[in-house]
Amino acid sequence: MSDPSTMMRRAREMREFIYRVEASSSGGEEPDQYPSSSSSSSTLPTALGGGLDAVGGGGGGGMNYCLIASKQMVGIFLSVWVRRELVQNIGHLRVDSVGRGIMGRLGNKGCIAMSMTLHQTSVCFVCSHLASGQKEGDEVRRNADVAEILKSTQFPRICKVPGQRVPEKIIDHDRIIWLGDLNYRVVLTYDETKALLEENDWDTLLENDQLMIERQAGRVFKGWKEGKIYFAPTYKYKPNTDSYAGETTKSKKKRRTPAWCDRILWHGRGIEQLQYIRGEDRFSDHRPVCSVFVVEADVDNGSKIRKGYSTLDSRIHCESPLPIPQRHSFYDF
Image (cartoon, rainbow, N blue to C red; front, side, top):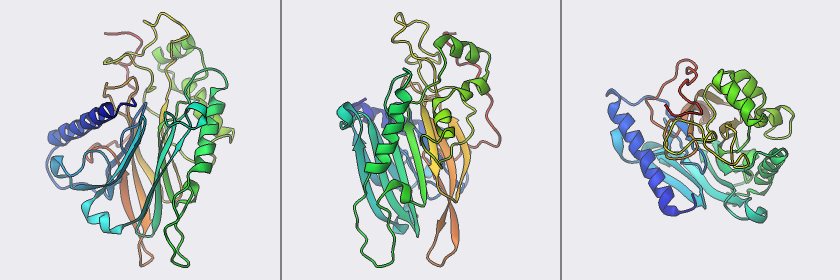
């Protein structure tokens, strides 16, 4: 994942995927909202749509976007694309990164954060890859990563206008979207998880999801929100298949229990989630996750506008929860 050529290939594959979706969609004017996406293991771009959108850019299907910021840190990659007519309303653009990998410093784990203002509203995107591992207690390391990211991320002070507030910390922004491979696991054995998956017993599985347990206990992401999960666990898949890895793994120590490692959360008022789904691209042992938001932004005259924040194609719609995918199993078909 750390090879830049690999990241470029994955970004190119995502762009080609978007162009295919765009080409297969019916013609007509662009909708007002656009979808927001996070990727799995090392994270693909994020975006601002209907206002801001992030994968692809300037190209296919009539989309007309400008790349305003991008950064890679080992296997983490974040980019933000903005519709051309909104560029003039973007200000105070800053980027920071925090390494939480080897010795708590290196960039194989950690985050990239991007801060900006849209009109008079401050917006922050955080793309992270937290501590891995499915042993008991590994969730504590992930919680510590989140705490350190919130503490250590420091955006440069660039505004000296008296009375104008430009946030320097993540949590001080009006609207925040946090996405990536958060690596929280299911606190059940492999066999218990396998049985529940085959029965489509999602409620029991989600009751044992580490992120939900830790959030409910107030140990991480206190005050943050996440949408209802209606999709299958996103990790770990056998390469280029729709089958979870595990049955063919000889060593039980290397066997990974399926889990919802890839997540999108948000913080702040004026954010409405319209969609929270997973994609089915097979270029990783994870499945990518995407979300669509409508976000309020304050304009100069004191009124509010609503803009969609996204990273996938604008014509993916979801009127009701998606059906539970039946075809994801431990076996090849």
